[in-house]
Length: 401
Ligand SMILES: Cc1cc2nc3c(=O)[nH]c(=O)nc-3n(C[C@H](O)[C@H](O)[C@H](O)COP(=O)(O)OP(=O)(O)OC[C@H]3O[C@@H](n4cnc5c(N)ncnc54)[C@H](O)[C@@H]3O)c2cc1C
Image (cartoon, rainbow, N blue to C red; front, top):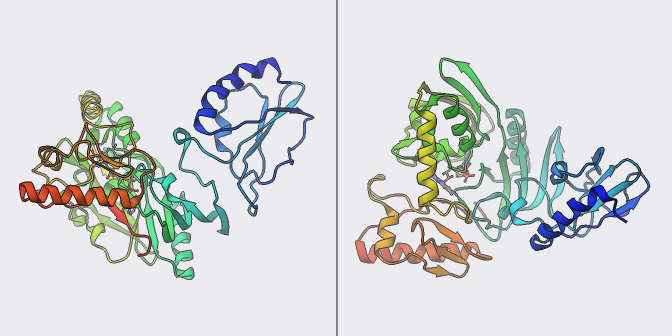
C-alpha cells in the first residue's frame, strides 16, 4: 500500500514515465538498505524527485554486475521506508550526460573513473552513435592529465568531447578513449576578464554575463555547446564569433602537457581555430575572456534568442548547421539547399529540416550511415544545380582513428 502523501507523485510518474519507457515499483518495507536487486549504478535523477521523503539515499555504485543495470534509491518517510526500482532505460528527455547504461568501470585513477562500453548517442545532440571503448568524465585539469596518461599507457586514441552538439559519431562507436570535458568553473578576474572552464555551457555563460551587463558574448545565446567546443570550432552567430573575445587559452597537448597561449596566436577564422589543424588531439582546459561593460547586452541577447527560436528547429535532434557557409561564411548554405528544393528530403531516419535547410534531423532511429548518405545526396545536388561545393561543419568522428 502506498501512503497518501506519495499518491499524487506516483500518479504523475504513472503518466509521464510509462510513455518514456520507465517502469517503477513502489513498495513499503521496513527501513533498511534495499538489496533485493543487484547493482545500483547511478541514480542521480532521483535526487530531484519532489516527493516528501525525509531522507533519500542512493545505493552504493557497484562496479561489476551482470545483465541490465538497475538504479535504486532508498528513503525513509515518517513511518515506513520506500524504494524505487528503475529498469535501466532512460527516457530521451531525461538523458543527462552521465555515465550509465551498459557502462562498466574498468579502472579508476584516483577520483577519475574510466568507463567501458558507453553508448555515445547519449552524449551528442544528434543522438546517434555506438559505444565508446572507454569514456572518462573530467572535472579538473588534473583529471584531464590523468585521462591523457591512461590513454598513453593503454595506447588508445583520444577524442575530446564537449556537449556533442557538432559531432556525428559512427554507429560502430569509437575505438579509443572519449574524454568528456566537464571542467566548469567561472571566475571574474576583474576589468572584464573572466576565467572559464572549457566544460562550461556557453549558452549559460552568455545568459549570465549579458544579464549582468557584460557585452561581447550575447551572440552565443542558444548555442548548445561548451566553451571549449566553441573555441575549437570558433562558434559564432549574428556576425560575431568566439575568437573575437578570447584573450588566452590553456590547453593540454597530445602528450598531456599544459600550455597557455595568447588568443591572437590561435588564427581564428570562420568556424576555424588552429586547434583543428593540430596533428594530435588537444584538450582545451580553460580560457580567459575579455568583455566590455554594455547596458544593452541583455536586450541584445533577448533579441538574438527570439530570432533563433523563430528560425531553427530548436527542440529537434540536430547538430546545428551541417555545412559551413561557402565563401568564408558570406553565402548561406541553407539558402543553396533550399533553392534546390531539398527541404524535407529524407534518407532512412535522417531528414533535412523544413524550418532551416542546413539543419538535418534525426527523425527516428537514424544511423550514422543514414545521416552520411543524406549529407552526400545534398552535397551532390547542390554542386550539380549551383556549382558550389559544400563542406561539412559537423565533425564526423570515425570509429577508428
Ligand atoms: C540547435 C543548435 C544550434 C547551433 N547553433 C550554432 C550557432 O549559432 N553557431 C555555431 O557556430 N554553432 C552552432 N551550433 C553547433 C555547436 O553548438 C557549436 O559548434 C559548439 O561550439 C560545439 O560545442 P560542443 O561543446 O558541443 O562541441 P562538440 O560537439 O562536443 O565537439 C565539436 C568539436 O570540438 C572539439 N572539442 C570540444 N571541446 C573541446 C575541448 N575542450 N578541447 C578541444 N577540443 C574540443 C571536439 O573534439 C570536436 O572536434 C549549434 C548546434 C545546435 C545543435
